Image (cartoon, rainbow, N blue to C red; front, top):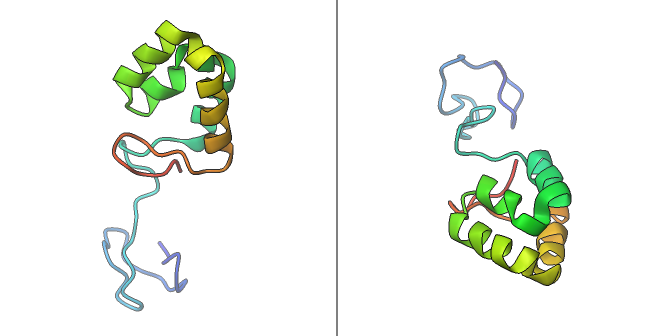
Length: 96
């Protein structure tokens, strides 16, 4: 495996690069949510808040179901935020 910052070879089990000191992040953890999946859910099922359920916002997802995506306005704002990559999961992490 190679460090994404300095490009030098490191151990496969490394947590920190011994050459530059940067933290080695796993490819995709279970907590991380995919940007493309969130975008597709928002485009196809945004009116019922499917993207909100996927990113951990269960309460807001239910509220979007009741209001049909905030009468379309809330859905549109979420879509713009996802496209601009400023949408965060409930844990406060950006989509990968």
